[in-house]
Image (cartoon, rainbow, N blue to C red; front, side, top):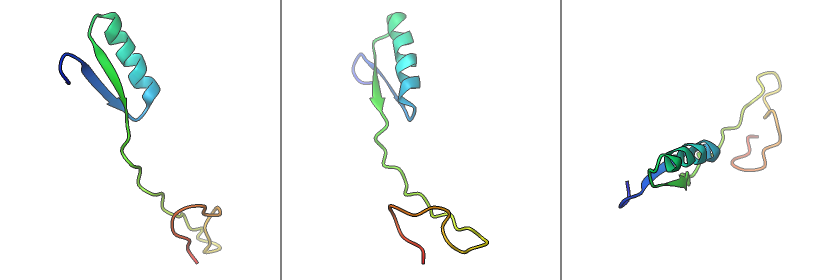
Length: 64
């Protein structure tokens, strides 16, 4: 809670916006805060038959 506003944070922004809108209809002052937490880099998945990545890696480490 920040002052007189209720804050909602969610990774799915549309869900938080719907929830906040419902609270506003009830008369509860609220505000939606987008989740700005940096995401962990995705791990490269290796095909067990070929020993190579399933897809071409565009970011992160390239496995040889």
